Amino acid sequence: MPWWYDQSPPQNRRWWERIPKEERAWKYRIRTESLSERTGITGHAWSVSGMSMTPDGVLTLYRGYGWDGMSFLALDTKDSQLGSAFHDALYRAIRLGLLPGSTRRDADTLFRRLNQESGMPTAR
Figure 1 (cartoon, rainbow, N blue to C red):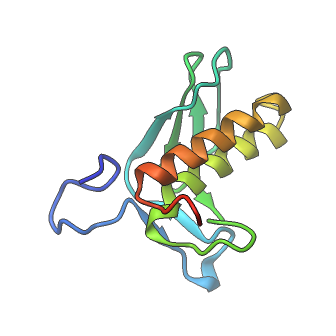
Figure 2: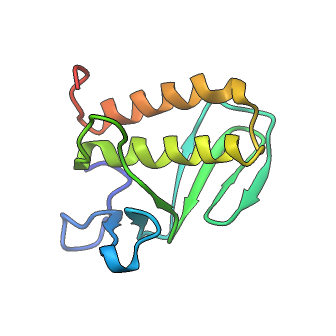
């Protein structure tokens, strides 16, 4: 079982949940304590609501962090959630001025890697 799933019973518990439309500012939110991923983007340290980054490039998303899921023509499926959460967080950090625009390529690379590790077909 991938590390980002809850290890507690039942075995199929997800680390994310869909937010009901009437409560929605975002489509999904993280329901576990936190998720961390090495991004390859180093030299930046910051912490804002729902996310933080260490100078060695570890991005952490905390419980309650919200995001919109996949964009454009892609479908929101279980195998796209992890990649879309971290991708959205990195692009949000770029928009907030926490990361330079030159890190977009790193965000896109991380997105593809996480989707592939989650089982998403590459032709999608």
